[in-house]
Image 1 (tube, helix red, strand yellow):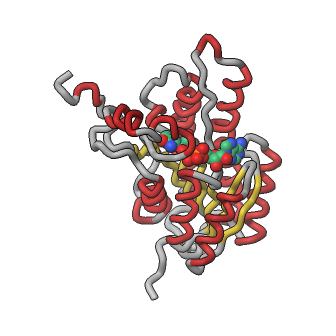
Image 2 (image 1 turned 30 degrees about the vertical axis):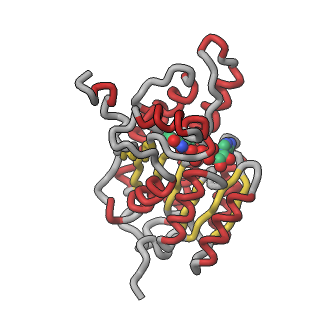
Length: 267
Ligand code: NAD
């Protein structure tokens, strides 16, 4: 039988009870990885992902943790190591929006989004790197470990009414690049995936009616709203040795949303 791309490796996927994280967890499992499917509140979607991976002959488990809390993150990695021996891949996916006009935005809304979207990625990356170093090279991959940060087109595109979210993703961009610079010599590969508009619960208002979808398509030169598998497929590839020389890069998966679509009709 042909070896699966990620056979023998273990992935931790945060915020994997819905949307993009759930799709990444399932895709990594189908590629042969053992998967730690993290959820914060309701476990149902995480259990669905675990069941799918197990039904395909893979190994997976759910672990509850709020990524903004260091003890919970450390405990999640300890559970991963206990169950699967080590961690090889981190998909730093958990994220949320608390939107408000700037003048109305509360400090709580600002702090909450930064705590989950940016500090959460910092805490998980640090726990992952400690485990990569503890384990050392094991022959399963050319890299000591791989970190994939779920960013957004809003690491680049400013977003009125969402300054907390845009600031968090702008932060993820330079955190990812600084980590790549610092950890590259240790053979730890760090990259981001920046989704455009992907149909998930986070943005259902933007696509659930035909009128809303039509408005959204004006921002997408490729004229298709993304689906979660668009991100799952790229994430598996970024986690695999096929992309071994990609380091410190943001891969935009956005149907061209970052191509200044306002200029589509000659500006
Ligand atoms: P989603 O709301 O379906 O998923 C987000 C997940 O994060 C949920 O499962 C939620 O429970 C989890 N989460 C929230 N707070 C958490 C915490 N403190 N600890 C652990 N988990 C927590 O939305 P999604 O669209 O799948 O978003 C996933 C990631 O993709 C986010 O980082 C988001 O910013 C990014 N993203 C999404 C889009 C899009 O169009 N959907 C575009 C760009 C970027």
